[in-house]
Image (cartoon, rainbow, N blue to C red; front, side):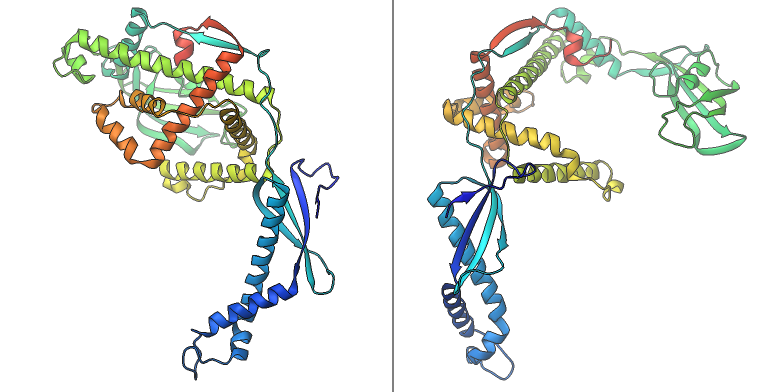
Length: 437
């Protein structure tokens, strides 16, 4: 029986239909054999085990046995036909029974998808812009300053508030003379210039002094998340508890010890910061290159992908998103997350997965043990005991598989770099690290 495909614009180009039949006599024989096996151990009140009359066994277990026999027969027929036609089935087939077959036969149609057949396209005309950045002393200095700011402490300013200060206040907000939900707080810290509060609110705190009381208007933006406040002008009354100014830690031995340098040696600290920074820069550069390389593969190979695989990937992404949400906030456990939200990204992942698998096979980009070890060593270098991390990876099959997948992706990226048109372009440190201007 030939494989057919419906002429329907909404049907996937990868969808196939197989019309098949199974002999009812074969099903009857399988049912009879199953019932005989069941009868040997069947238990029923009034009979010893294995002595239940076959007629009663058939009445009790017959429908289940027939259902299982039909399922097994369909699975066998489908498997034989798929092997005969050398089809690569993606996902589970959908079985539709036909109203009636020939006498003594059961007819059915299997509807399923197949994996796409394709060859990796030539990418010699594609262009990849390779970002480059060399870590200098200036980047090390900047990183150390970021580390100092992360350890900022606050001390009483003894002056009116300025941008950069922390102002601790009590406040009450009223709309039309009535307090509104979420508009009241005690000992609330506001970091001036951080942009965490509404602009009008922060602006009103610049210049206030400790102990001062003040009332001012604040206009909420039209797109504010609380609809009852969107676009509204409300009145806030505040009492200033403290005005604190930031104090950066001194660049001394104590600061070095805070960063893990036991003897407080500043040169060692600087060398450690530089090594960590170089690893992070390398990782971010590689991530940007990998994204471009994968996009080139996708653009050059616009293949169809099985809907079943996309749906499965989208469901798994939705389940992971919900699990992550519950881990961060258990109260969000009932948050409705639809798999359809992830369909576009799921399709990209499935397409990329098929492309990478075909490229690895066609170009013999399979990973070597030393490549996997290099990936693991690179990751382990950031830990206090790298050898313990290495042992952990090799003792955890799932973690080792992740390292193998990463090494394989590296091989794919190297292939793209070797076959596409590559130009290097310097990238600014702040842009790479995502630092605000």
